[in-house]
Length: 216
Length: 300
Image 1: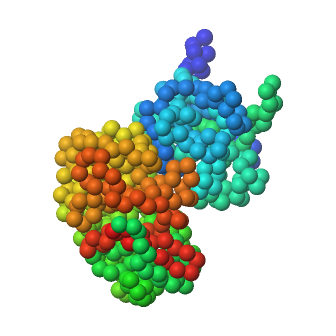
Image 2 (image 1 turned 180 degrees about the horizontal axis):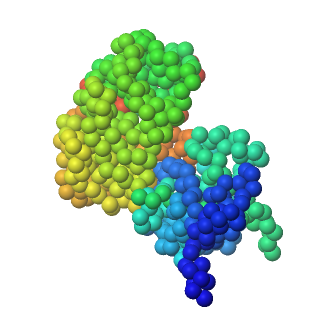
Image 3 (image 1 turned 180 degrees about the vertical axis):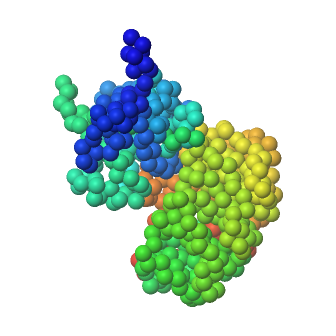
């Protein structure tokens, strides 16, 4: 029993490292030990690259309401669900992180007078967040459809960034080659795959966007 | 006074940016042929051409005396050049592309930052940073020096107006009354008041010493640029067409005193201005570019 208790006290990462040191764990060619350590670990716990910065833009508005459902009945535009996890660069989930989100409506217009398509969310105990909205339109003068994020968590550097959609016609189906068509897109990692689903009322899009914050 | 077309300057290539020197009849332009030109006004005679081939310019500033120009590109490279010779005086490398570049009134300092990063005040003579201005979330979107160059006001990404001492960068005041990012800031002529405007669609007048709001005037659209006239009596406001920034919106000249006095000038230019501003002799000039010429309009 004492041996089992000690094994439970080891983190999964420590256990795998110990196994590798003992020669009972080997990794295939082309797989790094860091990648092996990350597999199957729901809390991460391994080093991750910080999410790329993107500028805040002119239309941030503070004190947005805490709403998970931004889409109102009858709103024009493709229904969109976004979910993800807020982590730090050590892979630790950031419970209580605040995620401020704002984007244009289906016609590409921002609501300056009120808080349409603006929210402030709080990550749950596993760092998860989610919201329902609509696919933003193209703001005139800006190349890509995008959703703005401002993410803050205790002990981490605040991050402003933007979420882009791989289905945006601007990318012509190949974001890896075409993401720089919008000079403000600083990393292809910000262009996320879109899952199209059919619902009782029509098509819908779903996107996962994980955010990794740098530790202070 | 109705705006009048004061000069038409033929150009070799369509002008995309125009910067006016305040105290000397000079301007700097950047054109689609990737050339920066220093031109005299109002004749438009070329004084110097600097080749910018291969550089995507994000910020562009001309010192008030027309002696120095700063160009920041999308790779974060900032070049500070002498306009009389075109010689590179200093080159700075930022973490990424810059968000703004503003010269002090005496031309001795350049305020600059990578977009989203803290502002640095650069001594133009040495090319070295003399002070950093805070570290607001979202960086700084707008900046102005007081006329005596002792204070600097910022409109920051966290929707706060801040005032700093130029010497040392100590913050002396802040105002959190706005909910959206101030896109334009300016000092009154005596430096006692900061005017800020942006997505809140107000012009907020802030005490530069205490940060307290003095008054708030509603506007129809967000202010995108503000500049107080040399005599301190009026303020030119360039509004942003928030629904489509590619379209022009109003340019107004407002009396500085409190009250509901109508705008002295209220003009929607036929296209987006390439630049403009007050000259030290009290003319308000706005440059509109056509494919073959630069049209200088006089609003005051």
